[in-house]
Length: 231
Image (tube, rainbow, N blue to C red; front, side, top):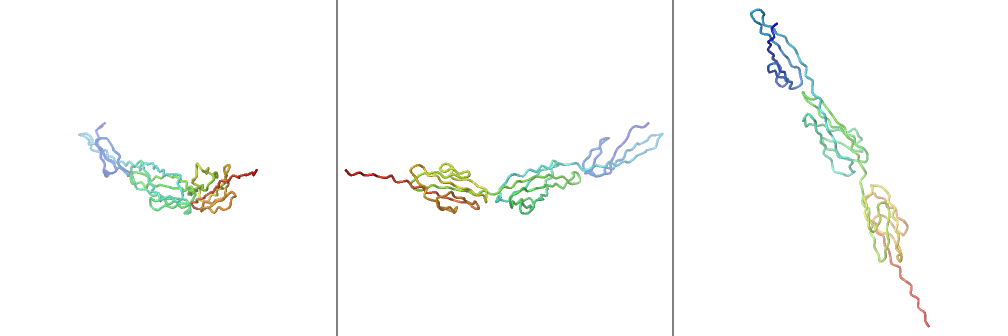
């Protein structure tokens, strides 16, 4: 039996190449091959053809946008990578437009919730389409509550996250309600609230954090009594 063969391909080098008896896969498509036996004095030359189908390779997309974020944050640029090295991605969201929107690679945060995102790499002749999903948790914005103490007396103001003096400022979820209580020190009297939080009088005050609020508590030193006895 004759055993010497010549192998060749008629396909483009972007699909496959043949060197000797080595077939190198380059890209997706059909690789058309020919095996030729040259023959000798006793046998005529002969050949056979075969096609090797080359499927697109799989690729993996990595997509990990920052989470959580806060309502009011600037638009976020979305990025992703693929094991193929291909760099063109399409980003989309399945969430309601009241939570988030996507235009191109820009994610716009709209409201509180979970923004479900997808990054898709379309692939090409050599790599199949691939995608990855990610969720971005969107928290309510924080508004700053600031408490100040004033007057000739001393005392404390307490509330959620507030223990003034000491901790007189706190970030509070927008729309939350914080109840402030003023407690005068011995020898002092709490004489009332003032400021932007809408607090008045001397009872405990509930502040609605629909915006940054600044509340002032006034304490007045009690005057001692003087007793005079005439002899």
